[in-house]
Amino acid sequence: MKQSVFEEVGLRLKIMKVNAAFSFRESIAYSANNWGGLASTVVYMITYLVFLGAIFGRVKTVAGYNYSEILLFTLVSQFNFYLAWIWSIKNIETLGESVKSGFFDLILTKPLPTLWYVTFLKINLTMLLIEMWPATLPLIYLLVKNAEFVISLPGLLWGSVIFICGHIAIHCMQFVFGLGAFWAGEYKAMNSLSYQIAFFGDSVPIEAYPKWFLTLGVSIFPFLLHTALTTSFILGKTTDLRWVLWSVLVMVVFLIIKKKMWEKALRAYSSASS
Amino acid sequence: MEKIIKVVDLVKIYEIPVKQSFWKSIFWSKNKDLLAVDRINIEIEEGESVALLGPNGAGKTTTLKMLTGLLYPTSGEIEVLGFRPTERRREFLKQIALVMGNKNSLSWDLPARASFELFKDIYEIKQRDFESRLMELSELLEVVEFLDNPVRKLSLGQRLKMELIGAILHRPKLLFLDEPTIGLDVVSKRKIRGFLRHLNKIEKTTIILTSHEMADIETVSDRVMVINGGVKVFDDSLEKLLHNYQDKKYLTVTFEKPVKRVELEKLGKVLSKKELVATLEISKKNQGKVMAILTESYEVDDIDVRSVPLDEIVEDLFGRTK
Figure 1 (cartoon, rainbow over the protein chains, first blue to last red):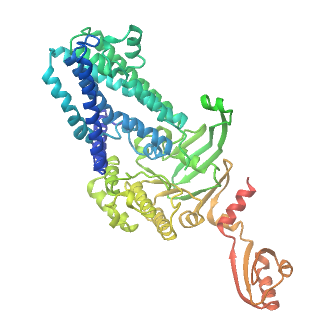
Figure 2 (cartoon, rainbow over the protein chains, first blue to last red; figure 1 turned 60 degrees about the horizontal axis):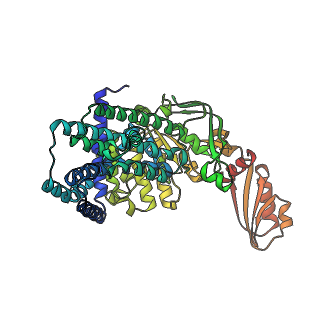
Figure 3 (cartoon, rainbow over the protein chains, first blue to last red; figure 1 turned 120 degrees about the vertical axis):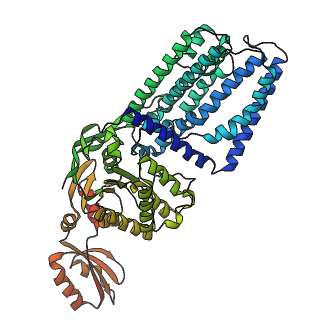
């Protein structure tokens, strides 16, 4: 019996809702863990803001970005970072671990759209509520206090589209790296490599890169879309709308690659011995 | 009865790494083929309870995993409940369940009830049905008072009972069990065996079981399929398997005074001999004669006659079909 598109969409939304609620219950089972997570992110944020303050105490701009623009760049990179940890990275790790341990057997035998299920198995709302906002508040405060830029509505709109496309594309790239577990039985080194690539573009604005590196960062390894190109669009430094179309195209291509590689991975799955 | 599993010429070949030099193995591993399942044919009817038996590495778990759609066969055809398992159709997966004795599907940090509620949503079980089914199953398995304890605080037996409950909340037609009593104490094993029998006889759930515990097979299964070296070497009722070995009997004799081994060897094959106790293997037709000689010629305190135990039958079968 073929289900309608609406039923399929409804099922997927329900999976997200149920998994989010279940992950939330799991995450509050260890309260000390949440306090530890909050402390580490706040310490990181403060350290990074001190570092930025020290740099911009000596120079006026970095790659054409002044202090307040770099703060905005940092805010976008933080959104990308937290969003990736809220739904993407933890699930890629969980998938690798479940393939290695054989727990994946018990996921595969559930009547679910498996790719969707493993993509949204853990949705860490605790990180969103307890870690992300408190840790980002000092940054937002400094940004509001030092804002010296004007954001146009189209810039914000197109920047948001690029952010979403870039975020999904980089998730797909990391996911494909993580699928190595189906062939090799191990995943940690590949996940670590994909993590380094994914956040490579989070430290320097897009304008700082040479052309060949820029080409690489918006295509095969799309690490420059989610933060660098997004911020450039929001600030009006890049306005060519072909970049928006390109970002959508990259996202679609990576979604297709993810789906195809998933099918291949399932065929290669050998299931850990019991 | 309707056939719910049809398997034709099933073959599974794994690629396993070959031992290589240090540098080669670091950068590029080389594989070789391992034939795990070799042209197996299976037909199982609705309501049957079938045990897959075999030594470690015989191919029984691989077969079970192909039947559930976890593994793609290298060649051959599989039809389960009218579906091709690897297509993983939702209508198919809603009718099956898999329990693996050494793998947990329940969240470690939350009470089992929380995982059951997740399964309720996954299998779209109505709240009222869910509540009554959960109560029924947890009462049968005597774990009602542990439903709200975190899974990590449960004993192995309680955890496995919870795994079973989670697997059958949605009343699957077909239940696959991979070593469901592994590591359990005798009381928990007996409880779970009884429960599985109940599922098969009362709820008419078809059961496919792999286990190294002969008592699991004797209690739960009616039909035995022996797989050795990837090949099916026996497929019939448990009675038939036992019947094939019925011409042999084991006599354990307790004497009041020590008896020489050479004297006992005249009566049958001496399997063990201690000072006052000896076990003899004799043919069934000689049973009366041997017992008469023993009681007339020696001072006998006790004689225990038993058939060949299932584990020895299986061991013999494994050895003969290697």
